[in-house]
Length: 134
Image 1 (cartoon, rainbow, N blue to C red):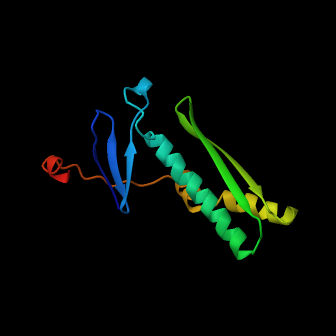
Image 2 (image 1 turned 120 degrees about the horizontal axis):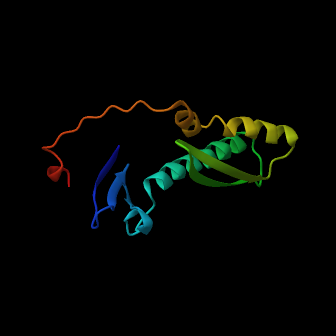
Image 3 (image 1 turned 180 degrees about the vertical axis):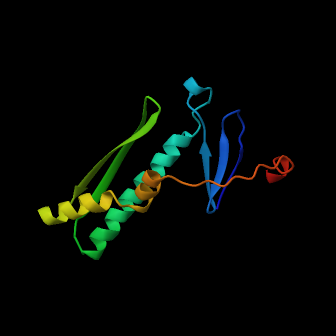
């Protein structure tokens, strides 16, 4: 469960995700104070974490010693489309067959599949609860 409430400045958002506190904000050029990652940065963070965790799990099952992974992501807009550029660096992969398997797995991580497939979002907007939620 994720819970978000207004922060100290107009675009800051206090987030509690599974008991972990985060702060989101917009950069100054969008009117924020840059006190935390932007909403799109948080989406990228989830994708980066899922990518690294999924590859690490696979390497662990294969008992690859010395496996390491680093993920870099960038969100950009092209026309009306949202695009994500993902670069994944790995080390400790024993052979070319292992690299081919990772290429397949990285495209099928749970968050990758969800983002590529789209989400169905069900929303309830209730004006009486906003102040009570804090």
